[in-house]
Structures are given as structure tokens and as C-alpha cells.
Length: 275
Image (tube, rainbow, N blue to C red; front, side):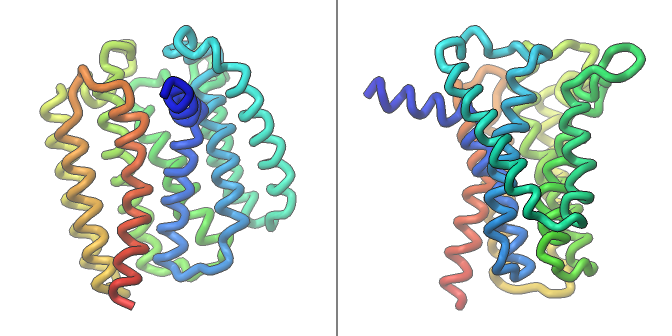
């Protein structure tokens, strides 16, 4: 049992789970835009997510969980460098256009951690922008770049999907901001710090309503699209309102991060049911 617990902790702490969540969102995009040749990009996004998230979590700037992870850091470092090496290898097999569109999101990830501004700050420490930077990066990597990679139609539905994904990511980040209230400096001015926990949940609920209603304006609308969006909205709402300042260790880092994977499963199941 202890061995299984160690494997699970490594799975979560090494960012494999969040990388799967990001890959699931890429898969959701591919399904919605009927892309069948996206395996290479899926693999690339998975490897890049492991490298990027571990870079953000375990850099010198972020020391939140270092003491707890001292024993497993060697394995995490190896996985990070291995993933980065494979990412670089497969990146060279991508088209120049795909890499050019991916580049700004890679830069944002680096600037999120590395202090390059005049006051030796980084994007994460600029008041009020942390959650929106993450939402921009996730939206770019899971919607914009995959559609460009697949040379799919960047039509009105693409615009709506991009807006929806941005709103969805913001909502998914709110439980983390509530969790980190006791760790985050007050200078960050996160949403829960600014308006409180209850109003943060109300704010997230409003975003989810907008996320759901935007589905209705899509030009190509199916029963699968409607039902899957309703279900993922409901699940997200439940996790949002179930978030507390004092929560179980893996509430956010496993369960909330599982919502994109649930979305993919829902989409695949409904497609099979309605096909």
C-alpha cells in the first residue's frame, strides 16, 4: 500500500497528472474540430507540460512544497529533463508555423517564473495577473496552437471555443487560488484576496454560465456539444463550490485537475452513444 501511495504522490508531484489534463483539453479541441492526425502534437503537449510545470513549481522562486518533496526531487528532475529533451526532439519535427505560434506561450511560461523586469519581478508576482497569464497559456496551447497545427478552419466557432476555454481555465484556477490564500503574498491581489472566497465562487459561477451560454451561438451545434458542455459545466460548478480554504491534500492537485480528463471522457462516451 505504501508503494502505491509513493507512486501516486510521484504521479501528482511530477506534473504527470496536469500534463494529462492539458493533453485531454487538446484532445477535446481535436474532437470538436474533427482532427484525426493530432497524435504528434498530443505527445508534444504532454512532454512540454511536464517540463514547463516542473520548471514553474520547483524553480528557486517557488519553494512552497520543496521540503515535502526532498526525497522524490531527483526523480522529478530526471523526468523533467528527459521530457524537455524529448520535447525539443519532437519540436524540430513540427512545422515552422506551429512553432512560431507556440513560441509566445513558451515565453510567457518562462516570464511567469524568471525575474526579468526592472524591479526584478516576474509575471507571477505582478498584482492581479497570475490567473489570467495561466489562462492565456493554457488556452493557446490547448486551442489556438492545436488548430493551427492541424490546419483546421479558424472560423467563428474557433473564436467561441477560444473564449470558452479561457473562461473554463480561469474557473479551474479559482480553487487553487482559494487553496493558496495562506501562502500567497497579499501583494499578489489574487481574486480570493480581493473579493473573498464566497464572492470568488459566485464570480466563477457567472463565468461558467457564460461558458455554457456561448455554446448556443456556435454555428455548428450538435447534441453531443450541448450535453457535454452542460455536464462539464455542472461538474466544474460542483468542484468550485466544494472548494474550501482548508481542503484535502489532493482536492485541487488531483480532483480539480481531473475535470479536463472527465470532459474528454464525457465527449468520447456521448459521441459513441449518438453515432
